[in-house]
Image (tube, rainbow, N blue to C red; front, side, top):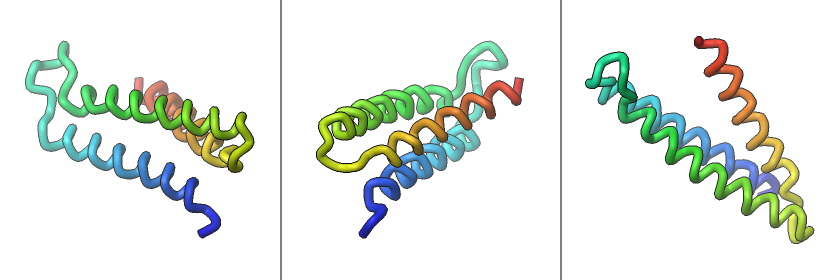
Length: 90
């Protein structure tokens, strides 16, 4: 498969965002407007896993083992899109 790495990265983000939005709908913010809900907590786990993947792909790209440039571009596009989405919502 030619795009195996890229599909895994896209699948990771699709799965984590699906879980994040599903949990946020099932368990809404019970603390009122001043506290975060469970979906917000899962967002931090998304960030930790994503940073780990970015570091892994960056070191693999710099080592020249495989071409991870597309994976790094996917990470960049997802986080830039998330940044724009959160700033347009406020």
